[in-house]
Image 1 (tube, one colour):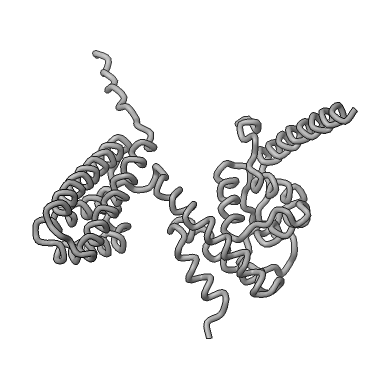
Image 2 (image 1 turned 60 degrees about the horizontal axis):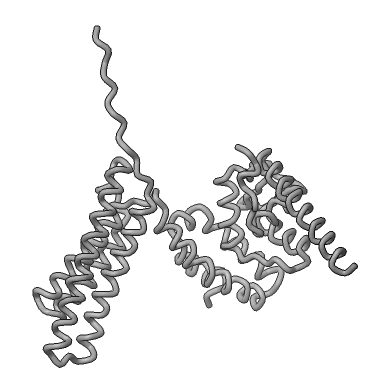
Amino acid sequence: MDPTDFLPLPQAQYHILVALTGGELHGYAIMQSVETTSGEVVRMGPATLYGTLKRLVDGGLVEETAERPTVGDDARRRYYRLTGLGRAACIAESDRLATLVQRTHANLRLGTA
Amino acid sequence: MVGHAEVYRALVRCYPRSFRHEYGDDLVTHFTEMVDHRGPGRAWRRTTLDLVVTVPRYRLEAVMNPRRSSAALFTLVTVLALAGVLSILVGLYPGIVLLAIAVVVAVTQRSRLAQSTRPPDPERRHRLLRAAGALGTACVVSTAAFWIELSVTENWHGGKLAAYNAVFFLTSIGAVTCLIAALRTPRTRRQPAVSRPLA
């Protein structure tokens, strides 16, 4: 499947993908990472987080993993990681946003000149 | 004293069954960690907003999901329609009692009903949903006509009017739900039978 088929990614999905670019994480760690990277602007409740994760898993962008990054971690926790398709979709969305930002800056500079 | 996690676990039951089965324990674990790390006040503020936004959304998505058993919807609307008709035939208040019993049975036994009458193919599912939508719509129209006639010819009490409004409202929800579900269910055309080559 072409990663650009998923664009534009909804904000919550994109933030979760960005959080998972650092490696596999469990649900609560994903929420913390999203808050940190968004400067506390994006705040997800539990159901929003797991509902979005379900969409990403169903879409093949994220998968559950049995690997545990830390020994002795809570066995009930489920860890998630990016798939190849998820990584490609995240890169494609980042490129799209970067182009948008560049265009915005260019237009604003023109406007102020 | 009931703890925060127990209260939240009870609220998680508001979500659709499939979501609950898959993520119910994760939701409670997540909430417990929020309470531990951020305190009950902040955890509840965020979670309450989350519940208000996501419960109706996930419920609606579950209803609109084409994979959801149409047999359960069909049964529910049929039962509602029959109870609505009965309420007209046997009198309003016995009819309302029947309606209430029918709704409780249909809702609590929906998964069993769905298992026993699960339609085997998408084409039949589509037909069932259309039939349920038509039946519900007919019931809504007939109830509305009856309601208008009686409201013109009789001086109704407030309770009686409210009861008929409830019947009308419930059958309308069933009818609209089935019609939308039928429209969203992908219709598959039967493949023509492949003729065997002559030996």
